[in-house]
Length: 307
Ligand code: 3PG
Image 1 (cartoon, rainbow, N blue to C red):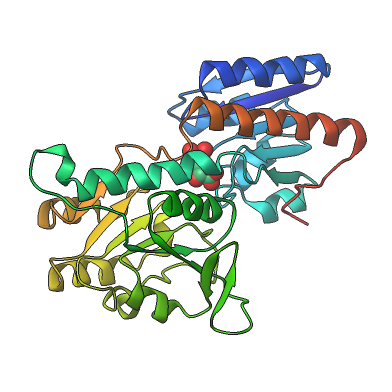
Image 2: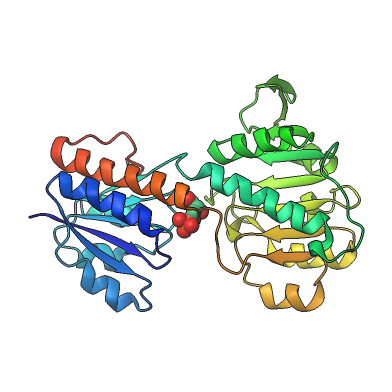
């Protein structure tokens, strides 16, 4: 019986694991679980004889792919697949997929949880401020961005989207205004939300030039990846501009310095938890299980990312 491994250093909710297992078993697979593992050797051992792997942010590098001699498919139950070495997978004829959109509402809701916590001064009883009427910039307008825009509109915020390929530098879609000019957006928005993937063209994109343009009292929210930020520039801007704040679900490398120097301007979740809801785990996990079954049984590869 072909084996599918669920390898999650940060486990799915039990309800999600049960539903993933049900789908895989109904399709004739044996389900193997490796949760909360602490050593790479455990992962290397667990992948040895499996045909499919479901992961979250778990690192699937060339060594893991080489150790998995029977591997046909890896599905990242989530959006960003920068944790999977797609080149190595292609080399070994392994299909890599993600499950786009399945956890995006959970991620978007966390943006507002962090924002409310911050503007209401950590619920410490001091006078805070409101989101209504503030300008919200969403970069980019993908699955997460669209949910952030929708919720922001519910709060009565003025929503702006960023779309790189927008022909004119200003247009209106879904009732939101769009720009293709980052400098313009950073100069305008009271809240900027980063929801784009970490790729060669986005890494360290958020730099001094953009950050220093932010209006007085502005807040940058990173719900995506730490690599988007030029950390030296972030440290510089926060020290020059005590009015700015950085809220993140992905801890930067310079976390210790931020905590020490800017306790009122910096907030990070204890562990990346944008997608950490039972609903998101279930949606993304079930999608992953179905994609694995369909790929192995019929070759269906709609969500393949290593073309
Ligand atoms: C994603 O890319 O889907 C999110 O960053 C969620 O990641 P996680 O599954 O590791 O929480």
